[in-house]
Structure formats: structure tokens, C-alpha cells
Length: 336
Length: 258
Image (cartoon, rainbow over all chains, first blue to last red; front, side, top):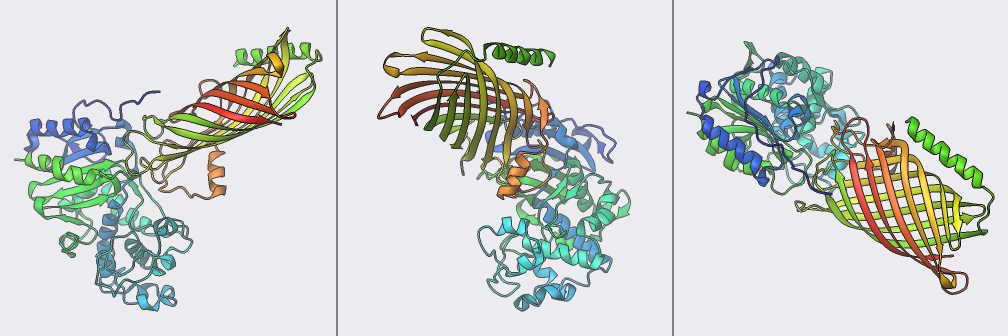
């Protein structure tokens, strides 16, 4: 038995013209160096350190100028777990929920929204939306199987609140899927339906995203931090909407003020906004997920780069570090 | 399909014709241990070959009346990896249950040849930790095939026994190629359920298994027998959609016949 090639052979990056709400264009028409982009794709195909890479989509000036599916061409039309990119969707949905008055303010404690869960967790009554959005609730993992138990919990909010506090809220940054799930349930309680339905009503439909899946815990509460499934081009729509300050095809989906607020650094030691990673060196911000899923927005270059990767690998050399350190810089440098 | 059925009918007809010609009456129980080398390519995940050692326990019961009956059980556990694996290897467990009913087709001097049908249940469960930390991968089959056995009597009550088993048709169960759930629920009941649902019928294109083995048996103390054996197993399992699981397992082992 023999190994077979992990990736397909490189055949260029010309985007497909589909009836999916996207216009396609060429690098030259949008002020990008074709030669430099070609080098980026060749390296991505050739080098083993990018083995987790499944797709690259590059959007400039609102048009797709390059895309490639390195493992399977069918990935263009296939939803995939975007892992912690989900958190960024939760952030934007929080902004829309604030704008539509389902949520009062960022300083609103969860104990006001769903008080019954805090009867047995009085020490966590002060945790607010803002604490959750900045991963500063003080909640730590109870044990090493925490994430697995969280996934299959019959009462996920109670399970999250059962975790020990490592200090008062607003202290240490502790990245987890728990905090966004507290937000998810806050939206569910105030909207009256799971956050995924809220997302469909206020975000996916306006963006023309028709095929998606959002996993829930056993009690029906959507995971706020992971397990949203999307197609790469639909991730790019989300990125383009962010780049356009909340607008998509003439419709203001989320307030531009919220885009500005959520993509601002709120946790300097982590380079983190409200579920956004702030790439100061690149003048960009990013939604990032396990393995290397990414939506990267570079406002000054009018550029959106979407990357999908194998979502379940435990590889130590995640795509994210390699991609940002090399290929993303090259894509940005290819912009005139 | 018609050809396969015809072949089976022929096997049965031949067997019925020979029924009653007589093999020596006895029942053997054999317990064994084998060390194997596994190569597995789970193409629903990645077309890389995972390989490694496998430890197996085997049990067989043979009944020789006029017909040779053989009931087999095998349970193996291996740790596999590829050259790319860094963090952790992969786990593979194998279960095999088989029953064959072989009829004497040829007998001359010290050589006896038997042929008959065999029904097998095989299950291979893997967790490819480096490549997919969240899901189980499996290939389960329930197959019907042909089994042939050659007995060669040597001096001093020693013997050689050679088996060649080939699946002809069966049902196989495989995971979906694209699974829209983030984590497998690793409970015994859930794993057993998912490994045994959505069986798809197929012939050689979906369920192909070939096993060849050779045993050397020699009497030891009392009525006990020392058994030295080696085997080679090839399996290719595929559901209607998705890609196949291919496995090659070579084993050498030692056992005691009681």
C-alpha cells in the first residue's frame, strides 16, 4: 500500500463565476500582482507546512479575484466546520441584538437575563456580556475533559457556570468556548429562539447565505464559540460585510459603530477585540478557528482573505501561524 | 451477481454430494496470540498509509464430523501512525467473528481438501488522533463467502492446515465522508450503534476480504497441541458514497490446542 498525494496539483486560481451573489474579477483589474499571487498559491500547494490548507479565497474591491481548493474542488459548495470563527459571528450577532434592543447594554449581567441559572452560582452573578466578549469572565475549565463534557452536556449553561472562578470578572483573559455560549443563550432568551435562528433572520438571509448548520448542546442552546458550518464563499461575504462597515448590497446589516467597536483592541495582552483577533502589524483583523480557518479583513487594502483548513487536526504546526507569517503578508504585498 | 450466486450454488451442490464421506470425529479448541503488522488507508480521511504493530487474541473451535466446522473469534488492538504524525499516533481495534462449514472435496493419502461457505462479521474501529481528533472511523462488514481448507498430515501426528477465505458478497457500514457534527460521542452504546448502521449491500466492489493462513500443529503434553501460525488479511470496504477503507494485516502467532 502506498501514500497518495495529499493535495491536488496546482492549476491556477481563477475564480468560478457562480450565481451566489459574488462578482468575480482578475488580479490586474483589481490592482493585484498576478505574479505575486501565483507565487503564493504555488507555495501553498507545494509546501508541507501548509498541509492543513483546504481553500484560499481572495476578495478585493468587493470582487473575488482568486480562489483555489487544494484538497477537493467540491469544497467550493460544501459547508465545513469553521470552528472558532463562530465566535466572531456571535460577536456580530451581539451587536445586532443590541441595535435591535434585545440586549440592553454590554454591562448587562447574564444573571439579569437568565436569573434562574444563578441560584446555585451566586458568585458568578456579576459576569456581564462585556466580560464574556473579552474572555474575562474569570471562569476556568473544571477538568481536562471539560470541552468534551461541555459538548454533550444536557444543561450547558449550568455546566459552564459550574466551572471554578480563577478571580473576579474583568481580570485574566481565558480563551474558551464557554463565554460565547453564555452570550448565545442571552440572545436566545431575549429573542425567543435559538441564536442560529436569530442569525438566519438578521444575518444569513440578508447575506444570501442559504446553506449552513449551527450545532447545539443537547438542550438546544447553540454553541457560541464553535461548530458553525459555512461555505468558504459565504465566509467571504461575512468578511466583505465587515469591510463595508456592516453593509452588504445596499443593506445595513449591523451598525458601523459596532463594527468599529468590536474590531478594536479590548484585551491588549492578547491582541483581542470582541471575538476578533487584532493583527496590528498587518493593520488587519481576523476571525480565526482551530486548524487555521480564517476570515481576514485588511481595510486599508480593501481586501478580504478567507482560508479554510482541516478543522479537526491536532497538528502542532497550525496553518494560522504559518499562513499569517508568510502567505498573508505576500497577498497584502501583492496589492498596489 | 448471477455469477456469484451460481458459484455459491455449485459450492453447496458439491458439498452435499460429498457429505457423509467421513472425517475423523473430534472437536478442537485453540487459544492463541499473534503479533501483526497493519497497514491501513482510510480514504474518507486522508490517502496516507497508517501502519504499526497489532496484538491480537484468537480463539477457534473446530468440529470434525463428516463436515469440518470452524468457528473463529479474533480481537486485535494496534497503534498506527504515518510519517507526518507528531502529536499522537492512531488507535485501531479489530474484531472478527467467522463461521465456516466445509465439505470434503478431495482426499488422497495424507491430504484432504475441503470447501464451503463462510459467514463473517468484521469490524475495524480507528481514531486518527493527529488527523481528526473528533471523530471515529470504522469499517464494518457482514459477508458471505467461500472458505477452503487443506489438511496435510505429517509424521508423528503433526499436521499443516491452510485456509483461504474469500468474501463474495455482503453488507458494509462506513462513516459518511463529510460528517456535519463536531464530535463523536465516545460511549460504548453510541460507537456500537454508529458502526452498525446504514449497512449497504455490495459484492466485490464494496465488500472485498481475503484471508490466507497456514498453521503448523504438533502434539505436546497430553492431548494438547502447539500451534504456530501465520496469516495475511486484505480488506477493502466501501459504502455507496465515500471512499474505501483498505487494510492489510500480516500476523504470526502461537497458540495452544486443547
